[in-house]
Image 1 (tube, rainbow, N blue to C red):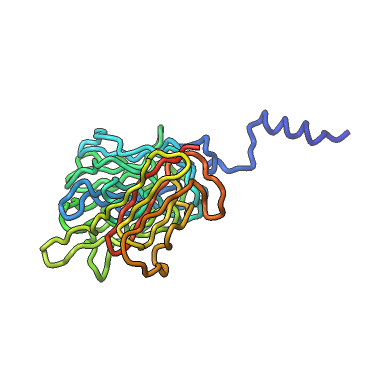
Image 2: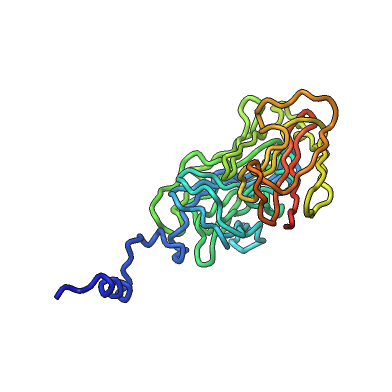
Length: 316
């Protein structure tokens, strides 16, 4: 008599067999995350409030980020602070997808919605930025005069604060499912300063990008002007009034970076040539007219008046 399929399934469960490879198990965090840090920017024109970290998925399925952290350590390998903890998973999980963590000042100045808003705490000129989960420092980038490296064969160059300068990865890590990743920061990273002809480009998980650059003459340029963007009431039920400097691009994204509503036009699109400031409202519905869930949404403006990103809270 042949065993029934149900009995075979129970036997497989008892023996611990699984059709899913170990590295693809979210319950096995020590081997699941294959995510590398690609850019670290600790200041813009000397302003340490303007900070950003970009990461890249080395394998598909790396969007399950709930509980993972971006931490910084000192030259001796001692934890300094947690920059931020991812509260949920992200939408895009294909290999090569980016994950962007920035301070609120960076996001507002450069008009991009980060996947994680971090506190301004990236140290200069020496420190170690680590993407990790409990039990695993997935990717560690030491730079400057490091005494105790956490998980890298070498240290990258010291990180300055002038102009638009960042540590930029030039060589990707291997995709073997190990933890930590076999990093060699001194070989794989270089210092780059963004200019108007060769800007630094940061990208979020949704695929939105922003260009970051300064002058190359030693006289630092200011960041893009921060536009006056208002939403009142905020939080709101029903409707909120929205005021922007002009009829430039004005859209609403959710916390995953997905486009929810277009109020004037999308970035880079053809905008109506109307004089004066924009004054309108949002009723908590998406482009298809469906009511969105309660939560935080981001109002993004880009026009002649500058750039701005404003968080608004919708309550059903």
